[in-house]
Length: 568
Image 1 (tube, helix red, strand yellow):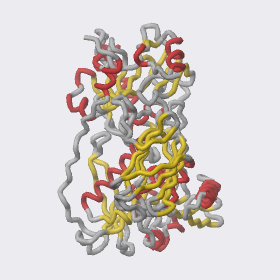
Image 2: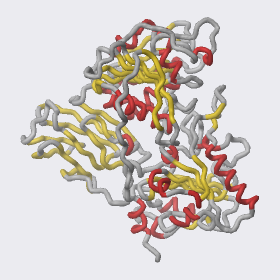
Image 3: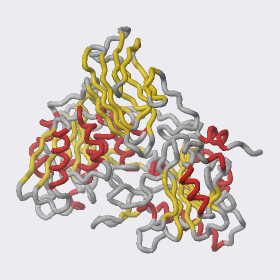
Image 4: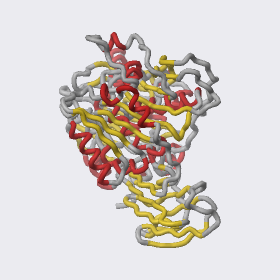
């Protein structure tokens, strides 16, 4: 039985995520140690460094510092670094990782995630950071209003990215010689309510001191609270000064999170990061920056300006400048009106005019967990699936399996830190995929509906297919299905290029340069450097007319009429 594209898409977006069960409480010794959590990305046990203060009392709430390590480092070394402990003499990092020396006790819990090697703090490593945070809060008594974030080099960049995409989690952040991922600078305004302290050596050969200088200037210009220490003649080891004598703990101690600031300024391009403090962005265009600047100008009086945003909700319950049951005067983008509200108010922009109304997304609309881009499917649990259909010869079947295995072998292709990224997703034949995989994992499917039974299973939902004439082409795209993502790689695999590294290096965030980062789909001929069409689906997971024409014009891709947006 054939079903319409819109009905199929409605089925595809049905959700059914699993539920996490709390772990049993544990009693652990004080001091430095290593813990593990079960990763939802690849079902491995992942380590993190942990420091528990002496005489830990579960009836007391403790301040928490999350410490992010640099490239080529690990969780054990960073637990030492944040306490001001460097390698001894000519000791190598490997030797220094083997033990924890004694250091002065602090009344903090400290956790240092392991970023899977050297992949930055987006994608899998970012997921790990939040899972470590959740694991620590589940096991121990944490003061969520006194939770802090710091890191050095790659971890300093991660401090900026994680700290500014979700600023309402952190009481303060401290980036040390930071190397932020591309696009982080657009989030500088999000630091309005998060005090920051930068540290950098002016002779740093790895991360130019201009990076911190630029960030400090931007934050000052934006009115944020920022401090900066620059060390004359110091190279990339500025953390030795920054963390010396427990300075970072005394600096953090003065700050407490403000859950209800009078002003919220927030920029995002993702539903995954659509909320800060008492403001939630309900409708935006994923991949395009949306900004809201909302501030109380008096009791129950709000002034709001927006860009790239068509729906938002203000969750005002508990705000000291708001009194429920009284009229709320709102001025938004030059339009003024009054609202009666109990504890929240929603606004929607229709035909360019803001109205008091709740956002009602279509069932097919992009949303958190169903917004793309391609790389998002690799940030949580996923499996690589090769096809067994079409009566392949043993040699052909082996070749199909090798392509999927190559995709699952995550390399590193930057700087001197060559080596394996420690991510271990499973590789399966289509006939071996279990119901639990369909329920809990994103699927990375190789082949076509003729060769892979799962692509055939979802073919009524999918917005495009590679035709039999596309032998020299590679088609690579993401699409939501049953509460998860399906990624289809038909024809040439996405890394096809003799001059490039293999596997997921094409997908990983900058500085791992990739033409695919941020895209929902790409069609290339010969290699991924020769792109015929690429872009993003619209808000309802349909192709824009111009993109559909490029895909169809190649004569290598079949695009169902219902997959094309009616909007110009």
